[in-house]
Amino acid sequence: MYKVQLTFTPEEAVILSFKAGRLGYNITKYVKLLIGREVLEQVERFPEFPISNQARKQVKQALIEHKAGKTIKIKGIDELDRL
Image (cartoon, rainbow, N blue to C red; front, top):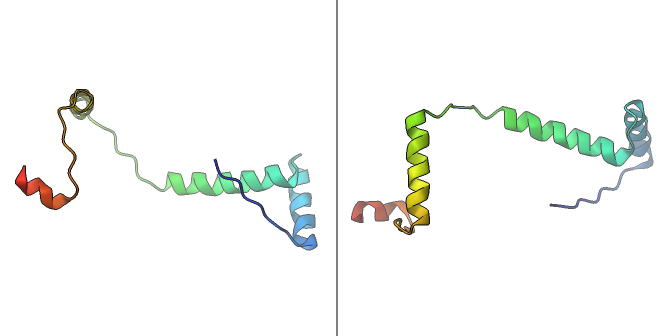
C-alpha cells in the first residue's frame, strides 16, 4: 500500500470540494475515485484472451512440478540453448 500526500491551491481545493460534494464525498474520497477511474481505464485497455482447457491443465501440471522441485532457474534466455 502506498501513501501519497498532495497539496492543492485554494482554488483547486474549492473546485475539488464542490465536485466531491455533488457526490456526497470529501476531497480525499473524490481524489481516490478519480485515481481509481484512471486505473480501471488503463486495465480495461489490456486485451483478454481466454485460456483453453488444455493450456489450463498444462499450467496446473507445471505448478505441481515446480512445487515438487522439478524445475530449474535460468538467468537469461541464452541459457535455454544449453538445456
